[in-house]
Length: 226
Image 1 (spheres, rainbow, N blue to C red):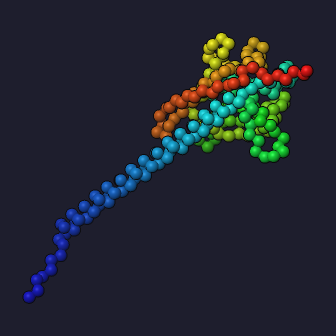
Image 2 (tube, rainbow, N blue to C red):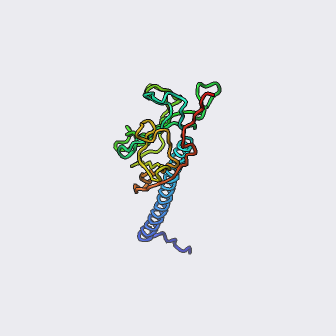
Image 3 (cartoon, rainbow, N blue to C red):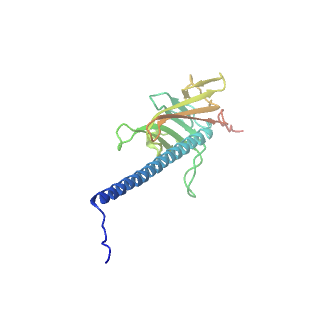
């Protein structure tokens, strides 16, 4: 006679189901942890890339800074200048540089330009402040707001920016500079600029990054008529 075939008991089915559920939960948790780690790593990489590019851009701008005496020195809006005012968490910074990149032939532009760094409240994220770079396409003696300019976000969600300028005459760091005032640093540029940016990393922790730029042209260009 054939032996009767036994099936699984209810207890065995429940144990097998429980083991399967535990294994699926462990697998799901592993997948989620891996996905979270990957997203965190990508966020760090994106943030670090943004910061490196921004600070590299600022260093390049400052290292191409220059002044010129080949213009009306009494103009209310001089074409070349460096003005740094410590105002709030982000100082008011604008200066002339030789770092403009002409992107098309026969453009009515040159390498000369005026750069502004300023804070801007992000309208899409309440409480978020971005660092903006404004580049004026052509230097002129007109009010800056009347000139065509390009705006770019250098760094999103910053806490503060600190600019320190090395005065090579009195050998000290200064947080203000003004080449347009007779009682300031008229016709004089700093030899070094120290840039410190404070912001939050993807985990919400404050980080502080510092770099320096060296300015080779401390004195103004002047091509006097012969």
